[in-house]
Amino acid sequence: MKFHNALAIGSMILVACNCFGSNSNNSDIDIDHKSADSSDINKQRLAWLAGSKAVAITGSVIMLDQMWYRDFPRSSFHFEDDILHWKQLDKLGHITSAYNISNASYKMFRWAGLDNKRSALYGSITSTLFMTSIEVLDGFSKEWGFSVSDQAANMVGAGMFYSQQLTWESQKIKPRYSFTSSGIEKYRPELLGSNKIENMLKDYNGMTFWLSMNLNMFSQKNEFFPKWLNIAVGYGGDGMLGSLENPSKHKGQPLPELERYRQWYLAPDIDLTQINTESQLLQLIFDALDFVKIPAPAIEYNNKHGWIFHLVHF
Image: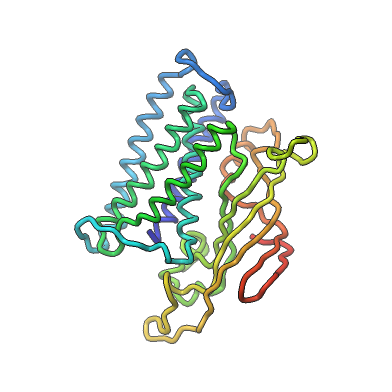
């Protein structure tokens, strides 16, 4: 699944905004309480939620089928192994997207009054169903195929959210995303994007995927670290003008010979959701940006340039 990482991230943002809007307008529901019985469930909200999710998932699949897949040849259902593509950055995109859709869906089920365990389960199932539906469409496309490694990444992302919510009833480790222009997207704009928005969604050379860990939640002395302070480990790649290898020419024009390499990062991060604010607008913004790694100083290591210090890395 190449381009669909972009679709998954876009859908995640839409689901999250819907979720956060619901929470901000209905502050009488506390999504942090640990238990709930049948009397706590708001049946009207739950019915609305179930219906809206069914419509959203079905509508998204139909829209993708008509607006994207119809431009490519169809085939019988088949599999494709793309585990080596894009130095596995697309797999991290799947993990990040599946995790954040699970998180947003979880909050919507808490808004409807379900307890922590059921909300985590249904949120993760919602995420898995949505991501799997895209894989199934891939399976009927001659251009791609159902990717087992993509599906495994989807399940890792949903499972990462579910396991933390059941174990800790909080999210101590969050997958996050950041982007900076790679500078090489100009050589293949139809593949890597022809504008900044497309670049952010299609150019893996500019993406970094992170695991951001909350220091306060892992500290035995909780007062030592601020609640909002995280430490993040990141992974990226550069020099990629193709998914597996770089072509020598594009549309008859020679392309530069670029070395493909991996990048590793260590950087501080900020968990905006842990910042106390009485403003519902700020809380909505903090929640909506929860999948984004905050720009900060970073240490990078790669096998081309060695150790690099970034005053600010996006």
